[in-house]
Length: 427
Image (cartoon, rainbow, N blue to C red; front, side, top):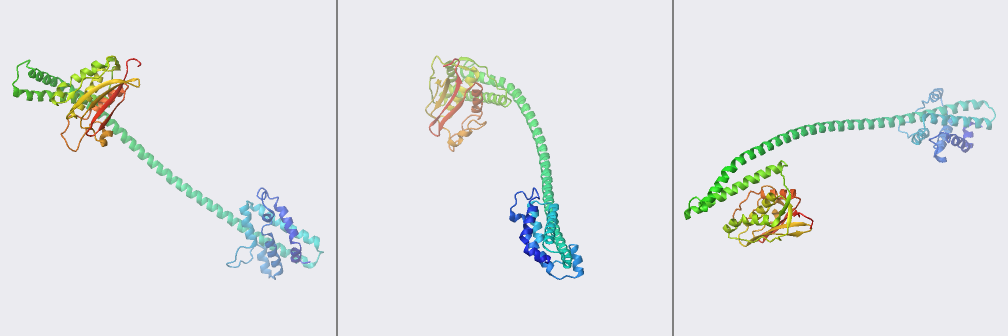
């Protein structure tokens, strides 16, 4: 029996032996099905049978023994090449692939020897079979190696690209870090310069303000003496200029004190000396200091509404400063009606309120009211006095004494400012 005939007759037996051998190629074959294990085996055997049946020259025989059989241009992969591709995908090594072909050769030859008596033609068939096996093996190895090389090159390319991107990212990070360090240095320099400028400003303000206070107090004092006739009785036409001098001096002195307070606040040096105080006396002193202003404005400055037993834990000077600021603001922003200050207990604290029937505050200015230098502005009406610092300072003082400050206001209907301070004893 010729070898080709034997292969066609016992093809399934041959494939079973090949499949059994393939199962030993671990770990790649561990989870492979029977169909996968004998992958393209039938096609490889048919190709070998076809080769055995075809006549060949001595030159062709030599070329095939070296794995150099002619390749048809444009042809698809052979069964051996496809088998190699699938074995790569399954995780076989090249040594395992070669061992498969050796097992196939041994299976066919041993089975054929058992099935057929020795004949002269068998030797030729044996040689031809070995040549066909060598050719198939060569094709598989070449495809296997090419695929592995392609995968390796692709992986290397990806790694090189990833490395290049990483280097670019690292370079960008280094540049950003350098820029941030430079910005940090610039910011540190700017902050240091600003701090130095702020300290110089504070020193200047303290020095100049203290220098201004003495002459201003003299102006305010002597104008007051002239107005009340303590020095000489003024003529009627002299009273108005003297009143302007005294009022302007007081406004300038208030401005100086507010600037000094803002300087202390910015430097974090605002201090309060807390003590137990009779609240009514503080409120009445603050109200009485503004009686003349209310008379000039032709407004009713109502008596203080406060219980005699209300005591607070506060700084007397600073508490009076806040009350006077709220009262003067109310008087300056009220054209008719009244201004009133009152105090009461509220949620374990003492609530102090200043209410007026003035021009009110537009809703779009509510959020800006406690910002430095902000002044209430209306589309129509006279310019109101003030620096825009009083409420900012008042808020800081109230917070320093452990309270809070706020307001309710509607344009054209007046305002109610309030703040809280701790009670001297638990309520």
